[in-house]
Length: 453
Image 1: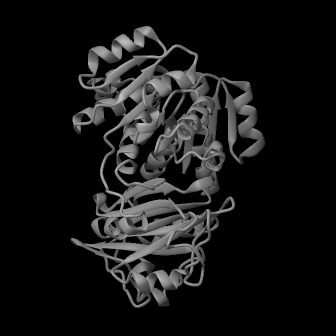
Image 2 (image 1 turned 90 degrees about the vertical axis):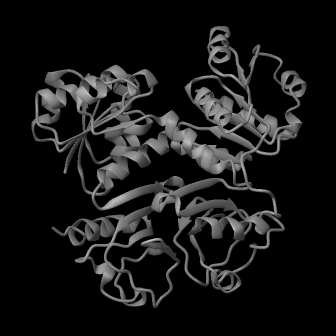
Image 3 (image 1 turned 180 degrees about the vertical axis):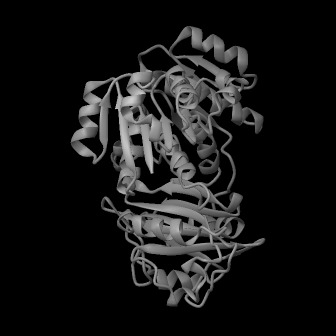
């Protein structure tokens, strides 16, 4: 498969990295010399310095033979123009564009441009936060099978009843049906086995049927009540902060939203009905947070465009008594560092955009993709077809690649947490966990074996 990636920023770089590791032929185009140099020095892809919306540049990149174009520059207009060129000057089967301006998303212009997938990172991030915030202690939440199956990531902390227990012991303690799908420990993701033991500081991903999983996790979290927090403060009134405040209002919550720009404050006050909009002078930080009773906040979210500022303010809010702090981090490589500093939840619009693109790239075989910390593993939801090796017998007898775990199965309306004697049937929606080194083997299996016409 030949793919042209326009834009070598955080999203473009990481998409090119993932797809090149899967054996795709990638050309990355960007007009910034430093970004192109970074790509050429670290990735096994072709690079081209130039404006991706220019026809001659696109022809040089190989648009005439491209199977897909992914336009993820910082300019909505450039991204749309790239897709327009791909549609009118060549027959490119799939066109993907990142657009941040909601006016474009709500217009009929996109229909005329014939864009197959439009990604709005801010909307994706808000949806992600609305999955995480109702679950106290959750660091990450991924939905599979249209929300019937959840993967919840949470840290094993001092005093936790999970500490020191093996996966076999957890399986005996909770036979109703949950599974530890992955463990992030000391910078590495482990696709676990029964004898692996949970240690303090582990980020553990539990996988199971939604209601059952939440019921089991509640006592592990000290019996804390599930549900959206009522006292919320948002730092940053940009697109992300505004969309989150608007979504919370629709759910009966009136957040405080803090912004430094006077014009943006007026914009927010005119469009938000229940939120309290606060104009924040640059200094003093602590005084304003103290005045606004940060210690009483259920959650403080730092969602500005400045990721270093987000991390620092989240930590400040935590030291001043906020019960839970969230930081938006755009550079995927900074996510582990942000967690190590003590931030409770780190959200990355860039990583969510990458997940969405990967899901679409594998469309027809894969329904959902979630990249785990440091891109060392993925959770993948796929459909088992009649010709697949997945349906040839009980799981214990399948010759699956090492580092691949079958985590959950949706069969009709029934969620199954599989055991060794479980057999996958054609039509099952299967959630798998795979380490990065097994991904190409699994992709080959899915691409070749699951195609049935």
